[in-house]
Length: 65
Image 1 (cartoon, rainbow, N blue to C red):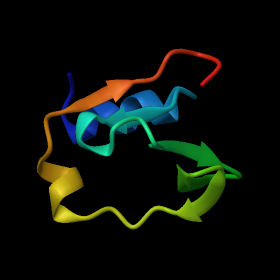
Image 2: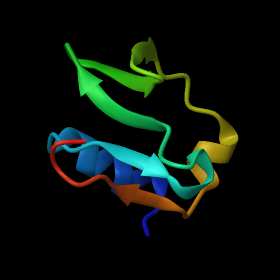
Image 3: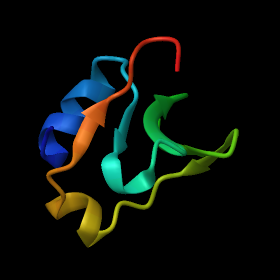
């Protein structure tokens, strides 16, 4: 598991990340140069909150997800 700065490094490297708290239904990624969150198949601009910043339950999703 990772911290938020580690998760951002993964996103910058082109990977998708999620939090265990999100139950793998949402993932964070870069899309068109913007930090986005994919929720139920729809992309939204990701407004990072305090919970995300302080969380230590970040994981990288396997490629293809």
